[in-house]
Image 1: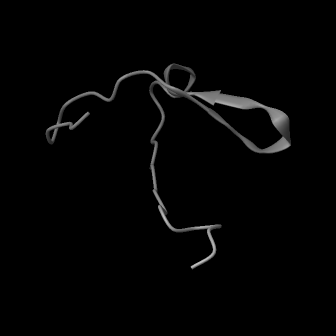
Image 2 (image 1 turned 180 degrees about the horizontal axis):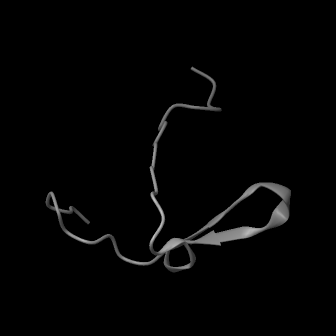
Length: 44
């Protein structure tokens, strides 16, 4: 799914540290930065 600049991200849940999930809607009103490292933790 491609987003345009200024478009709201859809809600999603990701595994966080300490076995606690993080849901985007729970962070509403806070600054959120997403960083993707597609080759992190993979043997190359």
